[in-house]
Structure formats: structure tokens, C-alpha cells
Image (cartoon, rainbow, N blue to C red; front, side, top):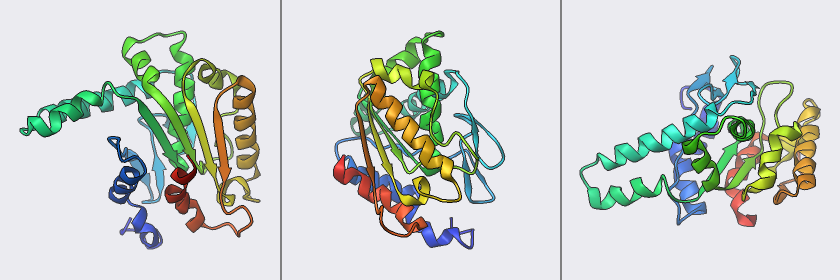
Length: 236
């Protein structure tokens, strides 16, 4: 972030600090921060390893289990590396729990495209069963969408009911935390419209959904967008 003239203003939200912050939000959990595999122009996070994206990171969602396969592979690889460390007493139990304990998934801003793709993957899993992926999905207990947004002109939020239907039969609680920076942006009106469709469709399906908008009466700013990272757990 320090390499970019403007982004350095927000260096406090770097990956290392996010690991510390998430540890405070979830003190009894092992917090894993997944960085984007590509940072276009040192600014636009691109998660091509989870979902097909264009040069700016705008996604093209497909009904495929590959995103969840990749998530399982990341956890498995991390578990193996922890097991390989010399301090077995310290790292061994952590390595085991990574593949056994309940999972909470959190996406922020562009990172929400990964959560969106997971929903498509859950639907695809119904027609292409996979034991490892199925076990991972059954461990997911909560998903947090934090002020999702990207540079594309659509697909900021999932609007296809078919992709949301698997949540109807899974024990996954959905949290939606947004700010005016995204859902009330006059130059990107589709974001708010899509978020409403997402929220209302989940409720229609009977999914357990909690939604909160922050700073609703304040002028939109990038600062409030980042601030949701600190604020969201206070009402969770």
C-alpha cells in the first residue's frame, strides 16, 4: 500500500493489521487472512484463484465448485505447513482444528466477490458432489458481507435465487453490513438495488439474515467504508 500515492493514506488497513483486528473480533478463533492473488495498478484487488475476473477484478460468476475446492486446498496446505513446524506442541493442535472446527467467512469490499462465488459453488455442489468440499460447506456457520463493491457495472451482490437456495438448507447465518459509500452511491445505483434483492430473496427463502447500515445520514466517504471493518462485530 505504501507504494501507491493515494493508497498509503489507508495503510492502517493492511493485511497484518487486519489479522490483529479480526483476532480482537473473534478472540477464540484462528483468523486466516487471504490476500488477493493480484493487485491491479497497486489498487484493485483481483481474486482470480476463486472467481474469473477481468483486469480490474470484476467477476464472472459460474456454477462451479472450483472456488470451494481452492478454499479447501488453502486450509489443507496451511494445516500441513503448521504440522511441519518443529514446535509440535504449539502448532499441532492448530493444524488439526483448521480442518475440523466451524468456519466463519468474511468478505470486505472487493473480497465479497469470493463469498458470492461460494454461493454459486454451493449450488454446483448439488449436481457435482465432492466429499472434501461438502465437509467444508457443512462446517461453515456464518458468512459476513462487509460493504461489498467492485469496479464492474453489475454482479456486486448475488441476485440469482438459484445461487441463494442452498443457504435455505444449510445452517449458515448471513450478516450484511453496509455504508452509504456503496449502497447509497448515486453514480452506482445498481449496488443498492442488488443488495436489496439479495437481502429480500434470502429472507423469502427463510435464511437467517442480519443487516445493518452504518452512517446512513452522513456524507459518503472512503473512511466510512473502511470503518465498517472495526464496527461490524459490535452488533453481530
